[in-house]
Image (cartoon, rainbow, N blue to C red; front, side):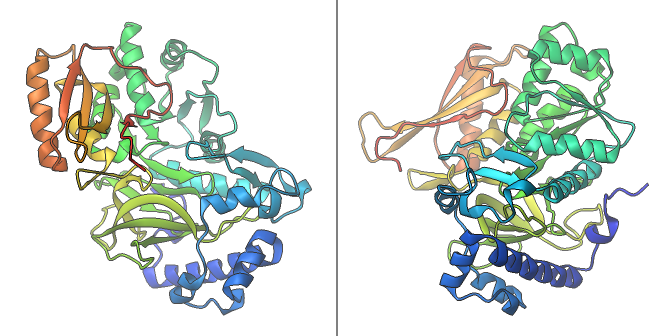
Length: 444
C-alpha cells in the first residue's frame, strides 16, 4: 500500500509540477475573470489578460488579494456572498466562515465539486499521516460553521476510516468514549490534545494505555514546535502530525511520517508563493509570507490571497526522506504576520516562547505571555512569561524561573520576567489558546 494518497502528483518532477501549476493558475484566473464580478474588476484594473499568463513572472504580475477586500466585496448581492460568488446561488452546497479573530468573518461558499476538492486535499493530509480504512478516528469538537473538521471528517469517510463525532460532550465524556470504543486516532488543536491528556489523568486513566496511536493537529502551529510535539507524543504515546490550512485557502500544508519536522506544501492543489516584504520570491533557507491560490475552486475562488502566515522555505531531495517532491516549510508555520511583534527592537515570534516552555519539564503545559510598557522607562517593553509548576517533578518555582529565563534569553535574545505560579492557576482552553496578551499603550 502506498504511503501517498496520489503518488503521481506527490512525486512529480519539479519542472513538470511547475508547468502544471502555471497552466492551472491560468485556468483559475480565467474562470475567476469570467464568473466573479469582484475578480473581473480587479483584473481589469490591473490590465491582466488571463490568457497571457504563461510563466511564473506573469503570475507575479497578477495583483494579490487582501482579506479586507473580501469583506468589502460581500457587502452586496447576492446575499450573503456578494461579488465574490462565482457560481449561481443554487450551486452552493456548503456554507462556512472564517473565525473572525482578526475582524468580521468572511463567508465561504463552496459547490459540491469544491467540497470534493476539500475532501481530496484533506485525504492527502490524513493518508500521509497514516490514517487508513481500519482506523477509528475521533473528532472531539462541535464543528459549527468552521470548515476544518468538517472537511477532515469527510476525508476520513473517503479513505474509509470510521468517524466518531464527539461534539456536545464534556472533556471527561470524550476521553471516556475514546477509551470505551478503542479510538485509534483523533484530530485536535495541539492545545486541546494536551488538555485531553490532562483530563484523562483526572479521570483516573493513563493516556498511554489508550488505543490511540495517531494525533492529527490543526488550528495552531504547535505540532511543528519541537517542544510541544514532544509533549503530546509523550502524553499519548502516539505519533503527532501537523496540518495547516485556512477557510479561504484549504488544506495547504501537512507533515508526514518522515523524519523532518515541518510541513510539505500541497503543491498539486495550490500555487504557493513564499515572498519577502517586497513581493519577491525568497530563496531556500529564507523566510517569507505565503501568497496562495487554490487551483481547483469554483464557487468562491481566490487568486493570490495574502495568507499572512510566515514560513521558512526548504526544497530539494534532502528535505524529507518520504520521497515527496513538494517544497517544505521547516518548523511549520512560524507565526502569523499579525502575531509577530517587535519587543525592544527584536522581532518576537510566539512559537519561540512556546518551544522554550514546552521543552522544559520543570513547568506544566499551560503558560501565557504578557507584553507591557516598562513601569519607569517608557521606551522599554517588558515581557512576562507566566508558567505553572509541574506537579510531576520536584523542581521549585525559583529553579524553574531561572532556567526559563536563561533559555528564553538564549533563544529569543530577550530578557523575560518569569512568574511560575501553582499548578492549575491558568485557564484551560477547550479549543485554541490565545496566550499572547499585548498590553502596550502605543502598540499597533
